Length: 363
Image (cartoon, rainbow, N blue to C red; front, side, top):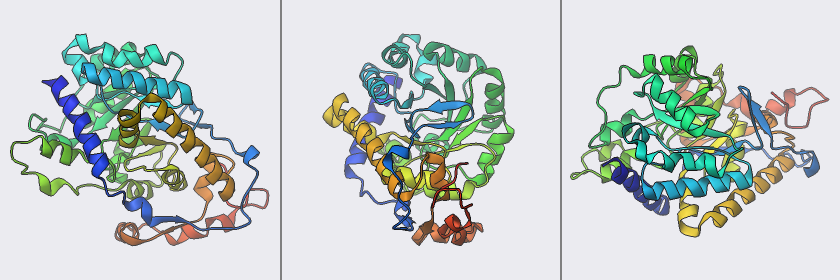
């Protein structure tokens, strides 16, 4: 039953990606163009570090799947793409492995294909500390993701209905494993209050997992005999809204959810993200064109991100957080209601020291 659900998730996610309008609240974020801000491309470095992590680029392949024969093949190909492009990568939820150890290979294939890469396991907030350790051991994981998905569970026919134990269990897992814990949403966003709570629970980083990409309320609603949770399809906070709401977060914040292209990566970094994750868009490329197509896409994204940073005058991903941006539309309205000052973002480069780059400063 779990394997069938995992295959359903992949099928419905890709169908949703193919039908997506392509619009989301990233379109409400615009860089202020400074025609003399550009620097030499040779001075740009994509490497980034946070919470003790050292990544070759501020981009990672985020949690997707695992638990069935078909999804094991997908994880193998994703791991190859990560290995060939130097990206960090996360498995999908490992709940299937905890219930049936015969599915272990659909997850451990990532480490077999990517022996030196940065790999994150992924578990739910109901997992025991022992299960969390099993996940880390199986993957020789560098970090552990815990996903939050209360709206998905609510719409899921066989989903959980009890959530009060999640926070204390996250605290126990964070204290009980030997690798950093990252908590992520699956597409409904993390508010500043949630991120503050996660910091208190000992979580090392938060992946906002905002609305705008794969919609798991719709995925689960499409699996129901009667699609009676359709009113949840627009639930949640967008990724840009989460990033603006989170500051100052006190822990590194990662961006995922609705990231469509290298410009969205740059926008996320400019709004304070330490790194940016992609799932659905990469999955569609893999299933439509194969692993070589995905490697080409990722390589192109990294090349384009370097080009954008060159034009914006950002020598490092961190320096994008000092570039001037304009916030408009629904995102601006959200910020106004939440008391977030957006006007200061459109002229922050004017306050840099003379020795700093025209539009950027390292964190």
